Amino acid sequence: MDTSLADAVIGHTLDGRYRVESRIARGGMASVYLGHDLRLDRQVALKIMHVSLADDEDFVARFIGEAKTVARLSHPNVVQVYDQGADSGYVYLAMEYVPGRTLRDLLNEQGRLAPAQALELMVPVLAALGAAHRAGLVHRDVKPENVLLSGDGRIKVADFGLARMMEGTANNLTKTGVMIGTVGYLAPEQVAQGTADARSDVYAAGIMLFELLTGVQPHTGETPLAVAYKHVNEVVPPPSTVVPGIPAPLDTLVQLVTAHDPGRRPADAGAFLRAVFDVQRGGLPTEVALAATPAAADPNSTQRVPRPGNQTLIVEHGPVPPEGPKRRVPRNRYPAVLVAAAVAVVAAAFGWWMLFGRFAEAPDLIGRSVTEAKSMATAQGLKAETATEHIYSDVESGKVAKTDPAAGDRIDNGGTIALFLSKGPRYVQMPKVAGKSQADAKDALREAGITDFKVEYEWSDLQAKNIVLSTSPGEGERADREDPVVLKVSRGFELPNVVGRQRGEAEAQLRQLGLNPAVTERQINDVPQGQVAEQNPRPGTGVSKGETVELVVSAGPEMVPIPDIRNWELKDAKKELKKLGFKVKEIKLGGEKVFNWSPQGQAPHGSEITVWTSFMGGDPKTPGQPAIPPGEGDDDG
Image (cartoon, rainbow, N blue to C red; front, side, top):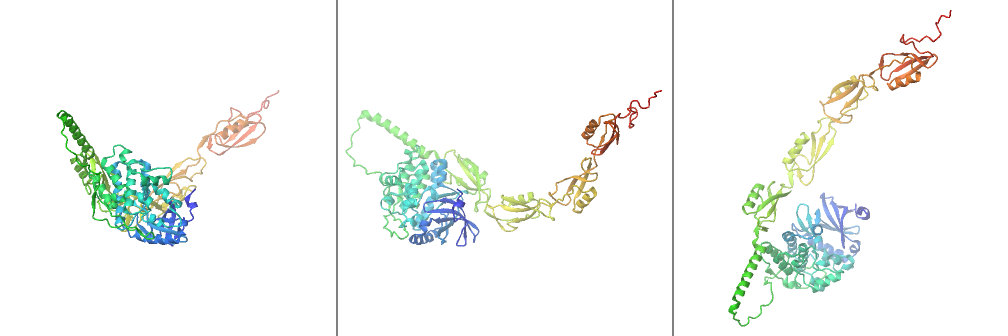
């Protein structure tokens, strides 16, 4: 069913400002709609709570307070909250609209990601969570569905604070569907005690990293309760047990951030992010800041995260057993010991090579030309290839704005760096193109960095065809390079219809309009002599002054030879003459044999031939004269 028919809110304007245009997604507690901010003339995402929640006064009060807190969170990787309100029973948030897809869509498409790609995706996610944790906010619903990937490469985290708003409503989590949708990412303490802090977000982000690396969640079950039970009673396995070949540092990182005990996890997303950087640089995440156990918060207030302490703890690998008395190694075992040592050295060297030695560090190519970037990559034994172009306001057009892998990241020796080039700033000043030809105008716009055009044609008695009349935005105004520039182009004036007019009349009318008639005469059977039979261009076509209009004027019908039909049967003569295009008038003097016809020789196609008939026909010796009937004129005596 078309959602525009099913949703009564579509077409409604909230608080006289936000027009609801179409539904984007439906969730357990709210539906998200594409909206238009009529005041600021921009697209927004409208998250409208389900009616069952909007009727809960406690929820609405908490919703408004939490929305205000989230709105103060400003970070490039956080979906910004613009406004909140309640209108006609609809409780809503107006948020930044991020066109594109979710991380869940990417996982559904690719199954799993390469380790380097997975870590690169985690960086902006953890940066966003880290900003929230520093502001005292806990997300509580970290999952791929809440990570948005825009078409221009931006990554943003959505739905901050919304999970917190759900607690204490008259509708429990199972009823709203939130538990079912997010149980795969719940930390053990959320399941067992119902408490959450920044380390709960760290756990959920760790589960998400596991899923990025393997394509599956670590804990699955037939029911949400079964999955929740596993979060409490089972450890998250190393990703390499699912996908062999995943580097050991990633196994260590995942097990670190998904530890059962919150005290053994990184203190917040910022500490998690630093551990990610350690792995990207080829190290092990051995030291992370751990947080003191936070005090229980008031369940009716927004939960704040205590500041991480200064305590730094080394990740434990188990107690070291006490050293026993040394035993002398028998001499005959020295060769075996040496071989074992050699094998260990080789294995260690191989492990070092696989994890670190085969990698180089990607150079910093930002701001370089393509030629410079390729030369620098070649100098380090790497390759560089151009990828796509994007708008970057802080990087000159044609220069490298982004690389994959990024500067300082690991790359295989001899590997290829993808160069993403800048198309320049998003906003440019519109050049003057009115009065130019359409082709010249487009060239001028391209020089200004504008490549998206929309052409609209208009009639004009003043401008010739294909000349630009005006633009939108106008000359000197600011143009958004992500929106098409409208070119209003002259189609000239409309050519009148002169077909059917006499030649002189048609020529005079065209000359009066500034056009040049060019006449060709041709014999045309069904058009009277001197009348216009055809014109090119056709009537209604746009033309400009000075253009030539070709006219075909009839020279009259063609002359057709008339056969000698003397002594023919009338029916045969009529059939032949009509086949040649003549009309036939018959005059019978008796009988059915033709003895005379007029005109003779030839006549215009379509003209009338008069045919006389008699019993005897005509005298073949005297053309055009009746034959003498047999017996008449004979001398009987």
